[in-house]
Structures are given as C-alpha cells and as structure tokens.
Amino acid sequence: TNMTRGLLGRVQQALKDSGHDPGRTDGRWNAQSARAMRQFQAANGLPQSGISMESLEKLQVSVGG
Image 1 (cartoon, one colour):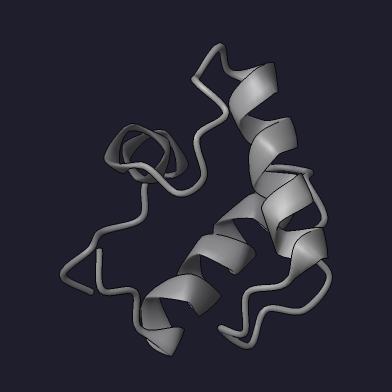
Image 2 (cartoon, rainbow, N blue to C red; image 1 turned 90 degrees about the vertical axis):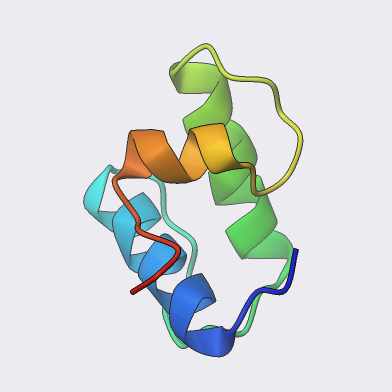
C-alpha cells in the first residue's frame, strides 16, 4: 500500500484521538506510531498486522482524504 504522509498523519491523529499515543502526528511513521497501532488493534479485536484497511475503517480514516 502506498501510504502518503498526509494519510499517515491522519492515522496518527485518529490513534491519538482514540487514546493510543502515536507520539508525533506529522505523517512520519515510527516505532511509537506502530506500537500505538498494535495497541489499538488489540483493544478492538483486530489482527495486529500493521496498517490494514480494517484498522483504517475502525479508526474512520478515509484513504481518499
């Protein structure tokens, strides 16, 4: 999947809004962002598989903007 910084920033902000601290929200994915995603996925019964369409849907992040 081709992830733009804009999309990654929206994912980070959605994680932060859901109570899972990704650290930065500037679209630069790092270990803290990945940890927040895994925590979000675990808390929501999702496979801990990185950024997935299912996770984006649950976070209500649109791929199109």
